[in-house]
Length: 316
Image: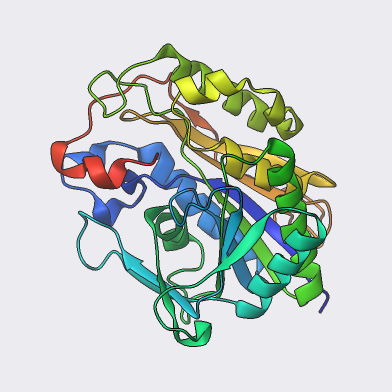
C-alpha cells in the first residue's frame, strides 16, 4: 500500500482533557474539550493510520533546530495525575529517519535526539505531556500502541521553516510507505485569567479568536500573518505546531473545528483534517461527509485552576 498522510488534528494537551486525570472538582470543567478529543479519537481510528507523528512544544528544546526523537521507545506518566495515566509507545524509527532526511532535503535545520542508552534502538526517551495527552485518545492506548514519531518545533526558526517541516512530514510518510497521522499538540492563549500563572492579558482572547476564525474558515495559510507581538502577549503555545500542520495539509485537505473553550487560564481547541481523497470522514460508497461534533465555543472567560493541578494543566 502506498504511503500517505491520511489524517491530521489539532489537539490540546491540558490535563483537563483526560477525565481520569481530573479531581472531582475539575470534572465539571472542559466538557467540550473531552467530547472533542473523543471525536478526534473516532476519526483517527477511521483513517486507519499505521504510525502517528506528534508535533509537541514540551519535549527537547534545541536552539536553531527542530528535534526528531529516534529512541526505540517514548514513555512517561502525567505528573500530578493517577499513576495509571501513563503510556509506553514504540518509536517508528524508519519513519523518524525518513523524516530527518526529508527535513534535510527541505533545508530545515533538524537533529536526531535519543536518550539514555548509546544504542537508539534500546533507548527510552521521556514522554512529555504534550505528547501523552493527545496519544491518550489517538493511538497510545491501542493494543499494541501505535508507533510514534515525535518532532519538536524551534521558536527561533521562521514560520517558513515550520511550514516546510510539515511538508516534510507528508513526504516522509510517502517515502516510508506508511499511512501516517499528524497531531499538532497545541494549547492557545495562556493569559485568560489574572489568577493563572501568566496573569491576564486581553491578547489571549484576541489570539484565540483569530485562531478559531482561521481554523473555522480553513485559512491556516494566514497563520504567518499573525503579529509576533500578539503571539507573545497572548502567551500562546500553538502557533508553531499549527504552522507545521498547515505545511502538511496545504494542498487538497479540508478541516473542521470541533470544539473550543477556555475553562481555566488557557484556550483548548480540537479540530480534524482530512485529505481530499481518500477521505476517512466520508460514508462508505456514498461520498457523504460524516457529521463531526457541533463546535462548542466558549467566549474565552476562565476560572482559576486548582492549586494541585496547575502543573499538569499548564500547557505553555
